[in-house]
Image (cartoon, rainbow, N blue to C red; front, side):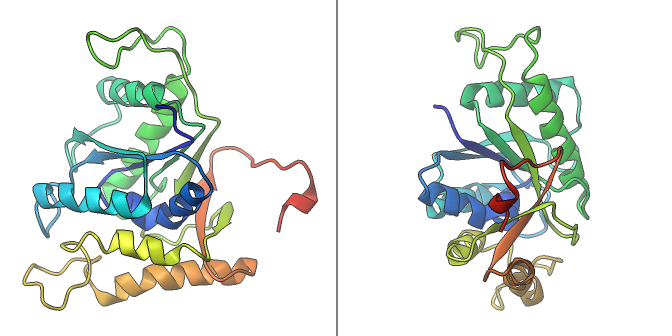
Length: 240
């Protein structure tokens, strides 16, 4: 299956938090979208890896993505090396996305920056003819494929975006997908230890960050991204 967009997250819920509304909008516009989680989030303070597996599938249904898969890399300990790059190259070549969206280039959680660089490097290497891969032992050799663009969503840190997307009609879908992770976010009845993302302030911040970005560009809600190379338009009038 060929995808238009493949979104990567170091942990289940990263994609929903970072670009859930953008994905929902593109899906509503007829694009085929997939999500790849690098780890199962097994080191998370709240919940379990098994529960997050189910939560991630619930969130995927809410967003309407075509596929969601988990690489099962080691949470907290995966590295950007050849072995991990090859596994991602196989995924990129399998789905041949036009665009890749991945973690913030720098963030509070060490996996976010690592995951960002790992995915970006794999996207480049995936286009090299002399790197030979098969998706499984019985498959045909895969053809090289390099996405046209790699975008990085914004996470804990308030990194200034290079591009913002108007998601005014999709913020509710984003929040429904985020809150599908019932163990991770604000729940006054939960007996689990508190974490930086389990507070009501954090859940509220998802919406008010999107509203503030929207304010800056003259829309109700927006999501921001950083880019690896200059964005180009055919005309200055293409910019809102």
